[in-house]
Amino acid sequence: MTAAKSAKGLANLIGPLSILNIALFAYVLFQPLLTTRISFFLRNDISLWQAAIDLYRIDKFLFAVVVLMGIVAPAIKMVAMTVAWYFADVKRAPHYMKWLVLLGRLSMLDVMLLAILIVAIKGIGIGTVLIRPGFYLYVVLVAGFLLLSLVMERMMETMSKRPRHGA
Image (cartoon, rainbow, N blue to C red):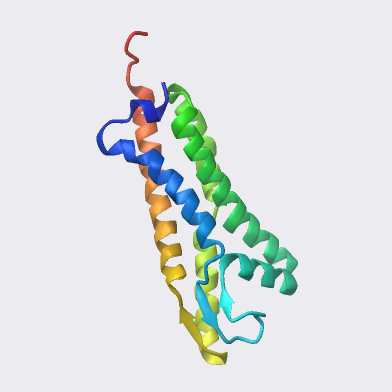
């Protein structure tokens, strides 16, 4: 039995919210978070994807860290948690969640958020920075997925400990 099939009440929203989160992540990657006039960025509108591309031109190591920890790992974690919710046997959930928690430690969306904040703060002295609606969506996405993953982890852990009916 999967967690999605075992879910009751508000827990039925976990799967759809997880899918929505994946879609929002894909959307927010390309949405302008900041509009800036800072000399080391090649564009005025800064999105997560564009920041990564501009970072590639400045520092390839930092680019690799940001892309792996700020884009790839969170995307893998979101997809893996959604797949686990819909397709994994709830009795194996603690095993899967152990790996997803490790992946969660690698997925540092909040680090990317902090990096953007630092650029914004530093930019005040050398240019202008305007926070765009995409930035707020990104903050909601980070906080929302953190909350969703904590709820999902607890629910799957609780469900894995319940005795199975008919078994």
